[in-house]
Image (cartoon, rainbow over all chains, first blue to last red; front, side, top):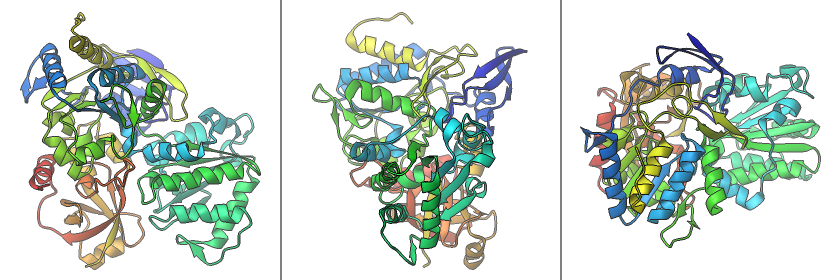
Amino acid sequence: MLKVENVVCPFCGCLCDDVIVYVEDGAIKGVEKACSIGRSLFLKHREDLSLPSIDGRETSIDEAINEAVNILRDKKHVLIYGLSSTSIEAQRKALELADLIGASIDQTTSICHGPTSLAIHQTGIPTCTLGEVKNRADVVVFWGSNPLEAHQRHYERYSLIPKGMFVTEGRRGRKLVVVDVRPTPSSRAADIFIQVRPGEDYEVLNALRYMLKGGKLDGEVGGVKVETLKSLLDIMLSAKYGVIFIGMGLTMTRGKYHNVEAALSLAIELNSHTRWSVVAMRGHYNVSGAGMVLLWQTGFPMAVNFSLGYPRYSPGEYSAVDLLRRKEVDAVLVIASDPVANFPREAVRNLLSLPIIAIDPKRSLTTMVAKVVIPTAKVGIETEGTAYRMDGVPIRVKKILNSIYPSDEEVLDRIIAKIKGEERNA
Amino acid sequence: MREFCLITGRTIKQGITLHDGKTTEVYRNEVGIVYLNGEDMEELGIIEGSSVLLKTDYGQVVVRAVKGDLPKGMAFMPYGPWANMLTSANTHGTGMPDLKGIKLYIYPACEEVWDWKRVLEEVKSVEG
């Protein structure tokens, strides 16, 4: 059995790069060090694969690509969506295609940390890498985030347990605070758990900012006693190096980017006293990369429209859910994502009325209803590429096995070539 | 009718079973569920593991009810097609729909937990 070391797990934004994979007869037979979700990803990567198809009829990759090209040529306003679970090389191609056909392009961040981007536009972000967290952070606060279920090795590898250069005692040298609307496995591991009433994070964060500036409060805010908030503030002020990790509990709740603005402002203001950073807990393994690529090429992180021949940015207008809700697109190209399973019902209903082209190694609800399905090699297992960790550190993911299918990058390159009237060898 | 607060989020089992496949039985068993406070379940006459009909202003779905460590009045569902039958597509100009903190009503149900095909039928059945 072949032992492959230092494999990077292409699941979540932790991009754990110490996984060991055992390969025999062209298949993955064993996995070590990965979390339970990562193990499932590696061991089941050949289960429930998609097949090349047009209107539910199995076909060849070439025919599926030709049909996709026909749709993309004919339609007036295409939405290109997904991108967070593929390489930056494929993301660059998707963006090139959007530019070429005057499409709108959006990535899954718009229903994830999109509000965090909007908040960063307003306040900026004091941030750091996970390496700095490991080596320096003595107080870590997880706000609206449940890493033990969504980023299972985050505590172990970066934020809580590891011994660092200036945190030599590891877990004993760090204080863990979890703020959430419900108890979770992550909150049970915390030194302090603060339970906020749903939808009132904004009030609690601003109460902390008010008290930091010397304001007096009594009673409770957002279901939390002011005394508890004072203790939290004391802990924050006594930190040598503090980090707030923000999750969907802030971005998906009432207030959305206002909640994140309040968290970022609190960290900025704490920097008048001691060092504090904020890191967003990014979900898909390369959702950060999708934002990077869009930013390099267009100046904007998501919700970009090319219909006038140059990039325009308008979240709420060119973001995927809004375009679908208002029925403003006539075809959708989905790359490495499953909007049929992940969008609200009203957006899915309108999506189902459109021709969908789905590029995905696995079967999903989107591939089940797509007009054209183009299977591809799984990035990080069957093809290599670059991905960005949640803290913006680029990491090269490996190819471990061969695939009979081309990569997302190759498929998009062939589509672009055909639309331009060039030909690429298959 | 008593109002609940619906929170959606990740669970380990949702993460593990999505690699089995989103049309599989094992995925439905782990994602087509709602976690409720034990006292709330008793008050509503809901037995652990039984079907419940969930309704919001945006849609409805039948899932399995499971006791969870939650404050009274809160319901938790894993991200996925079942939860998204109940979420709002209104992004209020931000691009982000309302995916947490949604008003929810809960009813005991005799129907089997919907499979993915039944979920998509329901999606299509609503006019707009």
